Image (cartoon, rainbow, N blue to C red; front, side, top):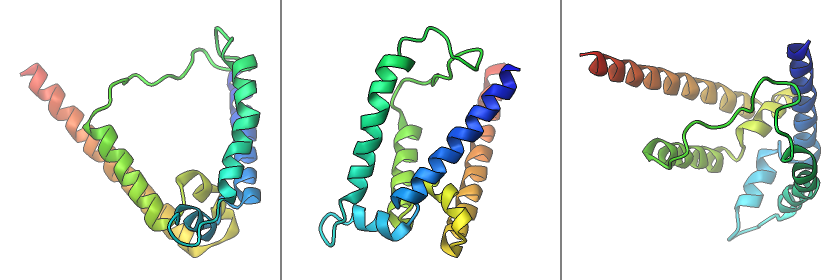
Length: 152
């Protein structure tokens, strides 16, 4: 029962997120690029979208989420194990930012944009999946090398 509630909650929140991305314009690469163009024809409207999201989320977080001692539909909280800023984090953030700036779209809105049928977004999504696959391959190769040197 807990797994079903978890999956239904994830499905509902994912749908709500995608709908919000489309309605707000964050799924439109041209609008995102206009927001990022702070020295040219800057479009500040996405700042209001982000601000509106924070106005709704922050009170909910402090009044409902933060006081919880345990998750509602999971066995434990999903927290990051790594807390140190390291080279993989910095390089990953730089690559993410570069990709966002070049494509004009973030992975979250890209997922919701797939439904709009924009071929550029489909190419971005395919490239993102290839990048994730290569990254996972490199990480697993690095982990296997580490385990081999530890056992030797």
